[in-house]
Image (cartoon, rainbow, N blue to C red; front, side, top):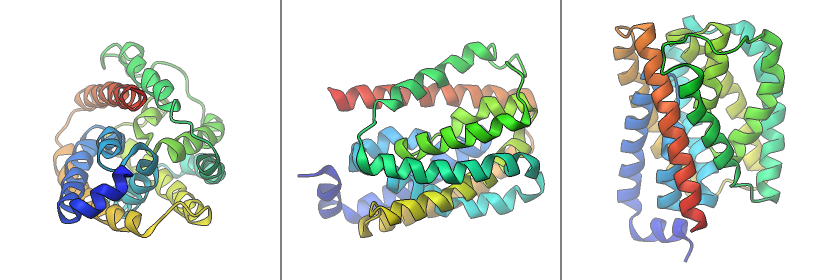
Length: 257
């Protein structure tokens, strides 16, 4: 029996509670470390509902949780970056949904995981503020690429962090700008998933539980972010990127075995 169907039949109430709690924990951590909460959930959701079902449920849940974070960080958004990133991300999300409906590209998790792990060297364990020069127009091709990969894998928040950091965005500005871009991309993702018939009734139920948990997690994380130093934030951010990369690689290798 499909893991998703089995989980739905045998432990539906328990799974809803677990998804809510997972959303709270992951997004509280995500707010304190510049994102990555959704990516942390990938291997967990792979186990609970199956690899093939993770991306639609995860993207739906994080989309539901984003309005709260958008309101919390509204004043910190860099709209100049959004104008370059968001339009290309909309196109990338639609293309990624089509690829997701046509092909199995789960091996991409390995490539993304290796890139995330490499950031610990790029930033010298958080001691280095920038690792390469980031120009504003770079966000155009980046939007297409990240949207495609994120739509297929289910979450790619941490992979954007090096680009935001190298552009000079940190703490509230990084989170606010990334949230705005993710929300706009999410509109395209959810619309595209629906268009290609990838969102079933069960997905909406699980996505809602996950999204409500993410909303509470955003509020909790924002309270503690104000007191955090930029250097500490950068260390947390890099740590979570490495952990996310390891989890992605482990989850993919486990699914192959």
